Image (cartoon, rainbow over all chains, first blue to last red; front, side, top):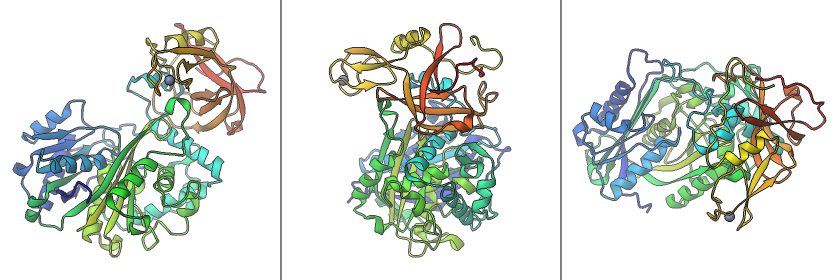
Length: 383
Length: 148
Ligand SMILES: [Zn+2]
């Protein structure tokens, strides 16, 4: 019993676009909503909860207007790319508390066609810590690079081991017809790509695409309306990490808090997890997340991601859709972790299907790993 | 080595909680705060202790010495000021006093920077009363700042 048992995921949709100069951002939201509601066998008029992010500060009202919705529950949390993983939890909690019955989570972005500098632009917020950071040129990318550098220093992790993550996930992308980059790559290809922020090479970094997606979470007694097998929300937890007044160990990330809490709520052990969907903004994100979730010890991530363990057919396949490294990264990838997890649990993944997939752990990371970041763990399962 | 010419990096917007820190930097002095009640040493400066919410603030002058905790040589940054500066070295320096601060390592070859390397603060005046604490390798000879 997770306390979230009154809710289930009943519909998902990943927008197939990776390049949409002919569409608006809200159009991608709406097309994704249509896809997920069709998948669920529900109508837009059934929706009484609306969750979204990546909007203007009060843009949730404009999104409700665009869809002509009058939701009685809404949420426009923004904790970076992990937001939509958190919003599955928020929707399930709201449904369990009786605040709504059919919650629609939507995402749309034109990061690629609008030439938005995802990961390589400066800070913009003007929050108190920014004045001690922005003058030195931090970006999303280089904040992760500093974690990678420290990881190599403390544990002897190699560039080849980081590259294994990119190579494995590209192989998965080759099995996904809508992935943006599908040609296999080698460790040597990763090491030969230019260094963008040492020790990270270009192919250690996620791609930039347009895209969107939607997820429908509904109250259990609406579940009988759904076309597909509902997916249960077994457990979840969120965490935030920052510089801790100048004392933080950069190799201990938010996942170390949210992972054990989510797994305890779900009542599962690591051995129960059939596959993971890990936010792969960078190769180091995957390696550090797997360590902090406890799939291996701190410092053993380099070995863990090698030797085929995280590939299809391996002990713990991850990011079977091709991830943000190769398939789809419009800036806030979290929703795709949930969508692929649901498709795997339903057995809809064809050539990239994980056999007997009954428990999937999703972990989203948002923000700047070496400065401030969020982590959200979500455990999903078949009934 | 003062005012920025050409593309500008974002300089600190000094506020009520940070004024003491930046005024000290302008004098060429680096300070961290210590809580007058629970003794927590903290960076960045703020009015209330984040551990016990005490308003008792003691400013502690640092030696300016520390070691590189981690770093990256940045080859890509699309924002103005930094786009023109690449490659530059972004780093966390652990001060001898025990707290870590984000900074740049300057006045040395980027590929000579190593974790654990001893460094010392070097203030660079950006005009308008703003001096940024950068760090240089301890054995580097003092010479003219090359950035900005
Ligand atoms: Zn205190």
